[in-house]
Length: 314
Image 1 (tube, helix red, strand yellow):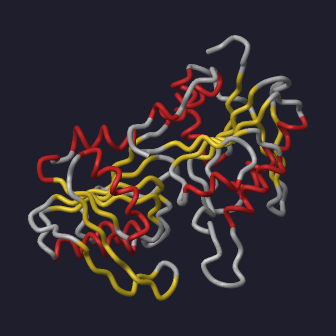
Image 2 (image 1 turned 90 degrees about the vertical axis):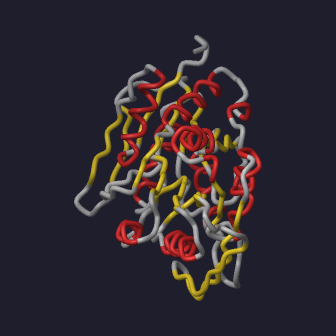
């Protein structure tokens, strides 16, 4: 690490598990910070060591509930007022990203609002992973390092899955680009699930575009919330003659009854990253860590090195 760019890593409450792994990879201690809670649920943030003139990396995913976002905003504000040299928000899972455009009249664009809040609070850079929509990077007026879980997933695919009979799939048309990237890189076929919704988190109808007969199917997506779509897609694949179905998802939001649905579905395995803590229990779930990837990105930011060269699939 360059001597002229001293840095410190701090963590929000709910992402400490990942920040500790990142610090282990960086061979540095996790910064000392205190969060004081008031009786009504309000809380305040204070750094318990000097951060003056330092590059400060704040690790916090903004998954539900919104206290995680508010905690991060207070961390940013406190760092700015404590004269940090630069403030880099490390947000493995960027919440509200599904609200990236006006898809009907009189709705908010939540992702843009969160970007404005982070910018106003005082971040100088954002490091995040697998945004729901790439254009969210343009909502920020600071540099955005957009990481991809593909570097973690590809190693698992190569070493653990039956490549000779594998076929990539996407549970909806919106994930076609992601599945296509894997398909081209691995030189394997791809199929698409086309779904229609009547309301959020509820799939009305689904059909397969392509042939899955006698194939080992790997569904790929960025977020699994209630797991309704991905389990319905898995069941449909098996009904159409697939040999097995697995799913590979970047962010395990996993709202109830997601785990129950996965356990009862035709899915043989559900593969997540640890961008969000998965606290439920399921024998079908495999969790891969992205800590080393984020640690390497922090190293490269501090050393003014390229980050894009890390990825073979985007």
